[in-house]
Length: 415
Ligand code: SAJ
Image (cartoon, rainbow, N blue to C red; front, side, top):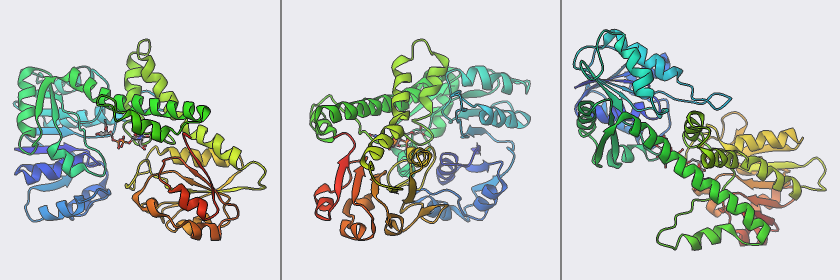
């Protein structure tokens, strides 16, 4: 098949590569000329393990190229961002303009698939009316539906192939055709359903995780008051065969889990109450960590905090919606000096690559992300450059005995 993939980001780019490897002729479409140029030169502009090599391996196959506008094809896959506005409403501008860009080239027999996580009704209420402006009709002349991406940044290439997938059709024929297309490279099972169920399924999966993390964060606060270590508590609870409590932390970042539940809240505010409260709970965690930091710094004049880890989760270079960025802002609002370091983004902006350089003259070290590199930190080296030796671990990543031996006074979120 000839397939146009619109949006060459974290999802569109690896999906394009997989489709090309599976033997399709793939045309990647992106508004940004630098992304198009990069792909045409065999380079990529995002960070994802194995992806650069994968794309280089396709060079010379002639099956993957990039352009700025869609061209005629047998199938179109939309993988553009669906962010939220400042007042927590779904911002569907990119899906809308991507859909519009297909209209001039849409022809009888084509297949249009939305991969972007979207509010329920996007396929039948937003996309169908736009695509039908071509004079063709969904279900009769072309197929249409939603097959949500479910891959985790950091392990995208593996999960694209091995995860199960949902094929939600505008009608049954559309669902069959979507499933058949993904079957050309997906080894997981593919389940056919209608597009509205597929839209809700994707939102529900991420919301499940958000609510579960909010529960863990609430437990952390309860345990602090009750003199219990929440990390040990959760470990013990999870020995139960039907319990799987997630981990507490300084908040939920990224562009998915902290966003998607709002799509449900926006549509069903009266009934989506737990979902709404979970969002608020997770969003309040940076302020909660700030409170603990401020009380640890009590009595220190002109204090300085050094934060280790600024990404939204471990072992990636992605800082989007990172709760640590909010923590930094909150500390600065309190006139507390802040420096930060991260092995994955060191050198970008104010983020230093060398943690010891960031820790110079600091009073409090905050562990913000559980990067693997932080498992064996040399606390004697930190003690040597810091002004006071205070440590707050928000991820249960630090060997507290080692830190104490080096003279640190240690605190842990949720204990
Ligand atoms: N987090 C916790 N505690 C935990 C797990 C995560 O605080 O126990 C935090 C992380 O630190 C991070 C945030 O949650 O800040 C989100 O990270 P994540 O690893 O849970 O998820 P994402 O956003 O990288 O990817 C999610 C995945 N969804 C699910 O696991 C249900 C992925 O499969 C989706 O494809 C992706 O969202 C997406 O694109 O929607």
